[in-house]
Structures are given as C-alpha cells and as structure tokens.
Length: 251
Length: 289
Image 1 (cartoon, one colour):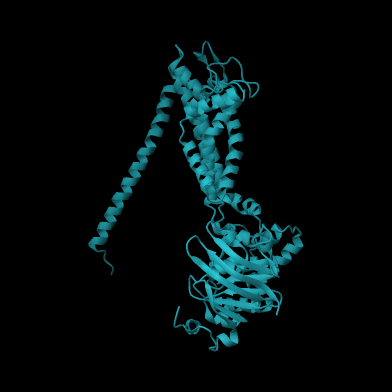
Image 2: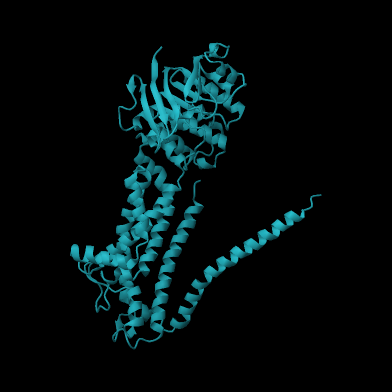
C-alpha cells in the first residue's frame, strides 16, 4: 500500500512536558485511520502537527519529521500550501463570523477562485456532504455564527472539504451532532475514502470500529497499539491496556 | 410551596444594598462632568454667538471671536490623527499577529505602556528637540501635529491591541486551517471584526489631542496670529492654548470669554466622543458573534 503520510520520531512539547514522545507512524493512501485513547494522550497534538498548526503555537517545540507523499512538510517555510492539501475539523465548532455561503466558499476564495458558478457548486456539494444542505439551503446568506452548535460543526466539516484536501483530519467531529446525522456523515466519509485519506480522532470507540480501517491507541504521547480493526477489536493486542480501554475498563 | 429562608432573604437585602452603593458611586462620577458644563454655560453663554465663533480676535484679544483657534485645532487634530492612526494600527497588528513573544517584543510592549504615561510637557520638549530643531521644521503646524501624534501613538496602539485580542483565536485557527495565509486571515477575519474597537480608540484619541495644550506649546502654537495658517509650515492658534492665554496672559478680556471658549472646546470634544460612542453602538448592533 502507498504511504500517504510518514511520521518519523515526532516529539512535541509545550515548554515543559512532551505531549508526543518519539512517535513514528505511517498512514496509507485512502485508508481511514482512527485514533483512540484517553484524554491528554496527545491525539489532538498529533493531528495539529500534521498541518503544522504548531507553527502558530508560541511555546510549542516540534522535532522529528513528517512526510506527505514522500516529501517533508517542513521543506517549504510557508505552510499555507500544505494546509490547502489537508482538511482539518477541530473539535469545537467554529462558524466564521460571516454568512454560511461565505464560510463554505472561504477556502476556495482565499485560494484565488473568483468564478461564482464554481463557488456555488463547491458550496452545495460540500454542504450536502456534511449533511447540512437541507437545513440551511433557504438561508445561505444568514450568519454562520447563529447556527446551532451541531450545525456549526457540520459547517466546519463542509469548510474543511471545500478546498478538496488530500488528507482529511477529523478531531472528534461528532461530539455535538445527534446520532442520526452522525450516521449520515459517517456514510459520506465512507464514500470520501475513495478519494482521500482520513485520519480521525474519536472518543467513541464504536465509531473507530465502524469507520476505521486501522485503529491506533494512544497513551501519554506514544502509540500503544496500532493494527487493523479486525484484529484490534477482536482481542489481538500488543498491550493489555488497549483491550481494557476498548472494553471500557480503563481510561 | 417554596418559601424563602432567612438566609436567602438576607442575601437579597445584601444584594440590593450593594447594587445601590455601586449605582450611587457611578452617579457621583457623572456629577462633576454635569456641573462643569452647567457652570461653563451659566458663566459663558452671554458671550456665545455666531460672531464669537466666526470672528477673529480683535483689540488685543479683548473682543471679537475665536475662529482662528478653531481652525488651528482642526488642523492639528486632523494631521496628528492621519499620522498616528496608520502607524499605531500597523504597529499593533504586528505586535498582536506577527511578533513572537520574546525579550525584544516584551521591551517594546513595556516601552509603549510607559510612553502612555509620559507627561505631555515632556512630549512637548521631545517635539521641540526632534521636530522643531533637529528636523528643522520650525515651530509649525506640522511639528505640533507630529508631537501630538507621538503622544497619541501609545493610546492608539494599546486600544488597537485590545480590539485585536478580542477576536477569538479560534477564528484565526479556522482560517489558517483551510489554507488562508496570515495576511489573508488578518484582512478577512481579524480586521473586519476588530474595526469597531480600533475606530473607537482612534476617535477617543482625537478628543484627547483637541484638548491638549502642553504638547503644542513649544512646537507650533502661537499666542496670537493676525492671519490664518496657509500651509502646515505656518504656526497656528489653538483653542486650548487660547483659553490659557485669555484667562491668564491678557488684561481686559470680558469675563464671559474664557468660559465661552472653554465651553466651545468641551462641546467639540464631547461631540467627537459621542461619534465614538455612536460608532461603537452601531457596530455592536451589527456584531456577528
């Protein structure tokens, strides 16, 4: 299988303690990699390292290397182009203070697209994929900040898809979304997998089980276990703690 | 049925007492402003007329009006804001959005805070040395305006910084996340949402410069000029300075004149400030988050 992302000896700290310690991980093309693990185990920091969001953190120090398609993401000093290739959905929904339409077309507009037809197409397509189109199609020019938390979260997903990323990172995308809508989005993710690589952090173990091709278990900034779902969720684990976490005994 | 306990009743009484205390203190703060304006009006209204506003001072400033001083104050304020506003906003954007938190930027921040506390007469001496003498501008509107600008810079920078900080960091991150550059994020996300605060700060600084006397004393304001300034290299008269002159330096000025001049100055500043307040409430109504 093609390696989409190669993480080599990644260490991240915020001044004092390592939140990610000497982590190495390969992520394959067109797979869904689920990352589970208790709070504070470095899952979000790992995602944020993938699109170099750490650059903006005043005290964060990152060492090691991450390769995207075999090329280090640190080659280019400007990380803007990297971020256009990676879609990121943060756990807290953020509707930018502009209309819903402007929110979803923000990324293509910033990338220089001015064609109104194309923008409209992207908007409808992405909102449909994020299972939000039916709810907002009549008020596309309304303020995004007035949407409910769950709607804003789906808007964030639509925005992350709007620049056609090669890799989609989802950080607990479903915490504010009801189960029915979550299922709709999960179905879409299943479709999207054909065209992109998906990395998702989740606290819902069943979601990892349903969606993931492989699942990684993180604890204290390292990967305890990483295997295909059929094995991992059937008791084939390297570390007993993974099994306990999956079964809800530990965490 | 629910019946409030004694403890709850006590709490309610305390709450009320505290609220009354706060509101009365606030009212007393408001009182001096009212009294000042009222008193100025009582003593000065007899001199107020269109002639007073639109005539030159004549007969050794003991008669006529204050027209040149209003024009002078207008020039000083406009030029100083035109200089200080872009510089201050740009510096604040750099400090807030680009500068790393290190020793140098911490020193710069500290310097800005300290600059805000420097007495205006010291600014005047600085202006005299730097603009009037060193840059050979002479005592002129330009030198005085630049001195005012230097004085207003820290105020504008500080208020702009506050407004920029008020834009949630999550907006910036959301914008960066979809591949917008730093500049695009500032242009499309940060600035539109901090503009109300920035504008308010700028307008308040206008009010401050309009009333400033010491900073323009050595740098460009004349005691008396028989003509209006023709360029920024001329000297001018100013309301605040004129008030000082006719209250202390000239014999035979009618009693009502200083009061009327002060009233004009205060009403000018108040109207500028109320523009700021109106702007702020307008933008708050249109606030998007």
